[in-house]
Amino acid sequence: MARCTPSGCSRASALGAASLAVLLLAGTPAAADWRWRQAAFPVAVFSGYTSHFGPRLGPWGGSEEHRGLDIAAPLGSPIRSWWGGLVKEVILDDSCGVGLVIRSGPYEHLYCHLAGSVEAGTYRSGSVQLQVGSPVRRGQVIAHVGVSGRSTGPHLHWGVRYGNTWVNPVLVLQAMAQARRR
Image (cartoon, rainbow, N blue to C red; front, side, top):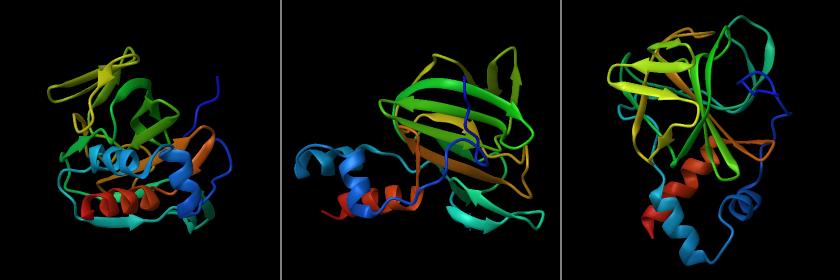
């Protein structure tokens, strides 16, 4: 079974805003607005963005595709699920470090560099305990900011895939903000 991490899987694709809206929010404009208002910003204590989606100079000097958005936050800050769904994967590797993949319909959202531990397929951090198949609600605390894996400081690497296509999380955040202004 193929697994995607911030540095591997399918080729990253920066979808245009119109394509993103069609892919993510099929249905009437009113329904789309309602759905975007339901999404949760994944970091409870926001400090800034430290690395964008797409081509970048990696932390060790090489050029690479970055398939997510790095969101700085104080070590141990709560991380919330962007959308409700089921835990698809619990990760422990050299790149993502401690991480989670949550499946929400055709979307998968990836959370990397988490604090906590993985033992026997179960992620634990404070009172959070998740394993493959665990249900999560939108906005539920699912993890805490750490520095695990290939990380140079405390932050969340947040990736969003629709089918096999990595989506720029900035477009997702823009759609969320736009829906809240209406």
